[in-house]
Image 1 (tube, rainbow, N blue to C red):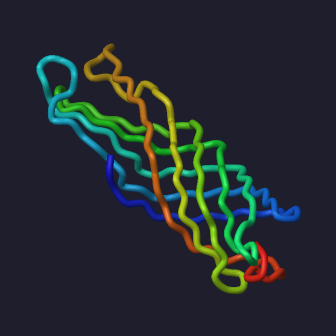
Image 2: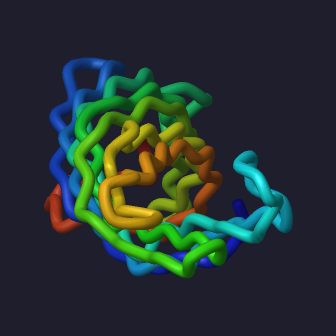
Amino acid sequence: MRGPFLGGTAGHNWQFGWWVLGLEGDYSWANIGGSSAACGTAPPHPCGTELQSFGTLRGRIGYAVGPAGTWLPYVTGGLAVGEVGAWDALTPAAGSAFRVGWTVGAGVEASFAPRWTVKLEYLHIDLGAARMFDVVPGVPETVSFRTDLIRAGLSYHFSAAPLVTRY
């Protein structure tokens, strides 16, 4: 699976000393896909899967580190949703469905100016397995979708507190 995605995030953080708890929601448009020239049924034939869009609603917990507390390593997890498409060239047949699953990951966020942070994040997304279409009438095609993402982000914090001296 390969491809680009672009989206936006909104969330809120609560800081308790050096601990930071947060809630984030995001949604992205995607063109992430993969295919195989020889799917498992006879005769061998091309088939593929794609993620057309996805979003998450996640909690996160982190601990501010560094001399001024401007680095925030964190773990995150929660709900994942996505529009998954699949196709099979044997008959040919195709379908897409909005799927609900889960996500878990980790990242680091760093303050570089008042109210501005950058982050690098890894997420594992699992949207489960479900019937997508019938290859031929009465013969369902079940498709599973899991992916691992690495993404970078730039955030503006609306909080009045300066973020340079402490996350």
